[in-house]
Length: 110
Image (cartoon, rainbow, N blue to C red; front, side):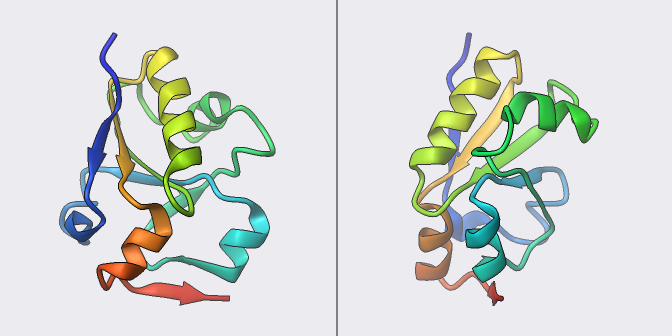
């Protein structure tokens, strides 16, 4: 079973995200306070099992998934769960939302 991959926050562009789904796994409060200004699905990892929620959104096992949290730790945990569940194209966004902000990505503030 392959491990998850990573993607640099600086490589996230509207174009690169057309073929991928960004999953923001931070808490509801964190997401309400600030979020990435790119299309994404908010799936708080503290509320339910990420695999079932990904399935509920109709994402295929071979869908390209970019996992985002605040700094990267929770994204790695979710990526590991998803790869163990058979998802084959899972990427952790390096540095999380803080990494995105540090490299100049647009962040929407709540």
